[in-house]
Image (cartoon, rainbow, N blue to C red; front, side, top):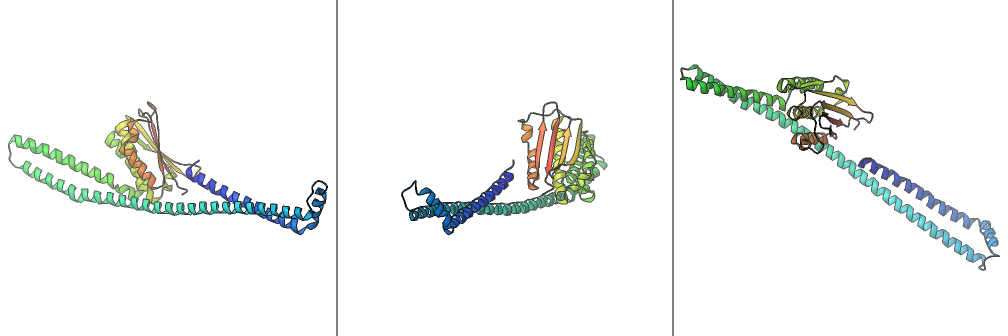
Length: 314
């Protein structure tokens, strides 16, 4: 049972106690009032007890009245305490609801800020660093066209190779930071593109299972989900020694959407350092921002299964 479920169960129990104690207090007061108003009942009880006891009827009525008053006082006090506990729990739940709302707003702002920063860095790489590298390459090609000695020409060729490599890395990083396909075509198409890119970059046979469940991911969650799957595929390529990986989505009966990334790699022990890497930490942070979570199941020589759980019902 989760912490929230325990809190709700405690609140329901407090309501039941308050109702029960209220009924008990009212019952005690009503019974006491009936005892005083229905004198015949008190008289019959007194006549029945008269042969056994020595005190008079007035003493019996006084003792009975005091007992009813004391019982009513204790019942009303218990009811008041139950109402106070109920009010305190309800106030706590209201405070928690307000805190959750503020946390959700801050999480949305954090995701928006991260998305904006990614777009800004992508634009900076493309418009500034990429253009600078391109100009550098043109200068190097201009020098190569001149009559230079063989040693200088070899150095120019090596510099051109480095410039071309830097330009390609810049283009790859730009696309990784802000993939246009995600914003233009949607999550399912973006994941297909990511699978193709994984085959080209790492020779990793990645397959995205077609499903209508991909459309259930809210638009504001698509980028963190895409970046999380991308990070998981990168982890598979770097650490798993896998030949194939499958990405699928399925909706569960509890209103959650689960995205599975399963590979056929070497796996690892649960206490392995791989579990505590920065990549998985960043995924956990993204999932926490949208109220989701990351689960990783693995065993040596049995592959790894990573699950992104999204609270669609919420």
